Length: 324
Ligand SMILES: NC(=O)C1=CN([C@@H]2O[C@H](COP(=O)(O)OP(=O)(O)OC[C@H]3O[C@@H](n4cnc5c(N)ncnc54)[C@H](OP(=O)(O)O)[C@@H]3O)[C@@H](O)[C@H]2O)C=CC1
Ligand SMILES: Nc1nc2c(ncn2[C@@H]2O[C@H](COP(=O)(O)O)[C@@H](O)[C@H]2O)c(=O)[nH]1
View 1 (cartoon, rainbow, N blue to C red):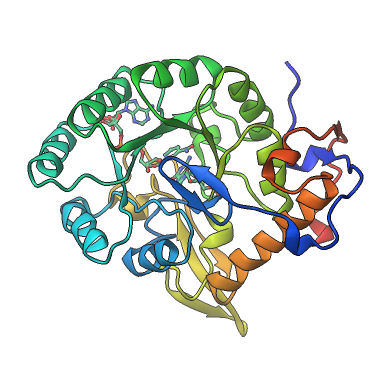
View 2: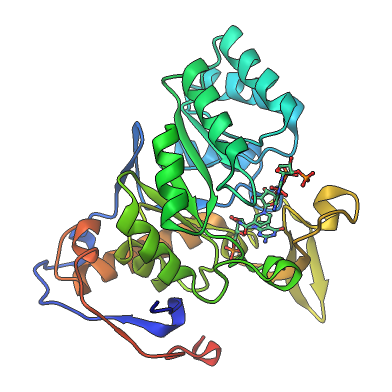
């Protein structure tokens, strides 16, 4: 099997057909809605909160609220709908989650999007949850994950998932590969490519994005949407506290399976770290859009579709950290 990751790939330019990068259309249809860019902040407590979810929904971006304040989720859906915004929430697979789905149904609080968010998504219990949500809330767009293989994509799609999230262990705050020996850490982009061969529905590439150009690479290898944690955790709108060390500002970023998140050292597969403070998320998302517009122009097209066709070369470790 050919393995490679983001830093090992360079996309090859085609003749440009647009006069200005401003003409390049970065929008993406994902489920029932169209979004400005194929980027979604990770559904982690250190990346998204309600204020940010509202801002993202109001400004044409996709978001997925995390599931770590379970008792707030029904009222969150209600508040989003009262504001005429779409609701996009996360669930797990424990027994109480079935009661929560029943509550949403009985209170007519159908969210537009639900993401089933567990570490090992290729599981009978994820399949059972997909089937339950689709039965109780048939109009909700269900994303299931996380997975690492084409077989998993097939199984979750066959169970009724509308999209699948790919990435086991490539995240910046992740220690899954060290603690368990498993995952797509170090070959996430190749895993995405393999999964895309099997997928008949959209894929979300989740984890391992370190540069804006990795978004275009994800699109090239089959992603409809790209989930980003560490690169979006360091903003003034991000939930973590600002910490100043030697005059430099940072924000806290912690894994959803970290001791900090779990409140106990049990099945820990994540860590807490500091990420550089980056100002407003508005500017970072705008820069991502501009860079993606450049990517589309290099691809020789006018929209994201053009990136999916470009040739590429594998140049192992061609991009050094020192370049940035
Ligand atoms: N994308 C990634 O690479 C990873 C992401 N995460 C994130 O961390 C958070 C916590 O995840 P998770 O541990 O799934 O949360 P949960 O505690 O919600 O676990 C999910 C359920 O699956 C069971 N389970 C069985 N085998 C596994 C397994 N190998 N890994 C995880 N659960 C298993 C758990 O039972 P029991 O606890 O009794 O085993 C539990 O009932 C999620 O937000 C997830 O996205 C975590 C690790 C990797
Ligand atoms: N193995 C773990 N993975 C985790 C944990 N918390 C979140 N995640 C995954 O990471 C991505 C974000 O990756 P990044 O490279 O952009 O920072 C996130 O969407 C989850 O899938 C964890 O504790 N352990």
